[in-house]
Image 1 (spheres, rainbow, N blue to C red):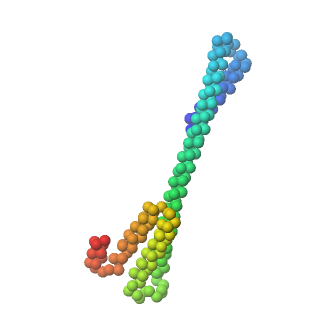
Image 2 (cartoon, rainbow, N blue to C red):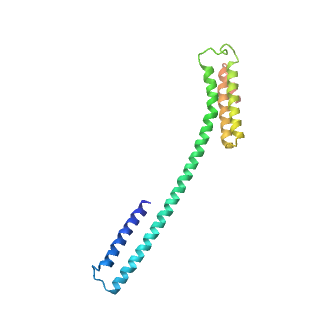
Amino acid sequence: QKSLVYLVTALRSNETLMMKLERTGFLSLNEDEKEILNDLIVDNSQALEMANIYTNILSSTLDAFASIIANNQNQVLKRLAVITIVLTFPVLIASLFGMNVPSGFEHSKYAFYIVSLLSLGIALVIGWYFFRKKADKKLVYLLIGLTLTFLSLTAPVQLEGNYITLFWAAE
């Protein structure tokens, strides 16, 4: 694009110079030379028009390319927003129950499972909402996979000794 701008600028200055040469008669040209100069002026004008046309075409192509990139970027940001929304609520639930604040669950041996199932349930409900809303199917499957992966990594933490290894091996 920069080269086309330089070419257009050079062609315009050449056109101005040749028009002045034709008007002033500074070179005292004979008829054949005047005809050649007129041909050069016409060729230069045609080259200038073609350069302007190609500049417009290039500009339009670059604008179309930029809009395609912006559209793809919007799709990626939309997917990341959905992932963030789905993963935010389970993390919020787990962090609230993980604080050293009395919640009524601290003495229950099922507290971990209740919080994990609550987080999984919320993630599945939000995932189902986006699935029903006709969100990208691959995105929904990714979110379900991430939720199940995090759940399967945290479940063995409640086990002791060799049972952790057995659980992960079975997984």
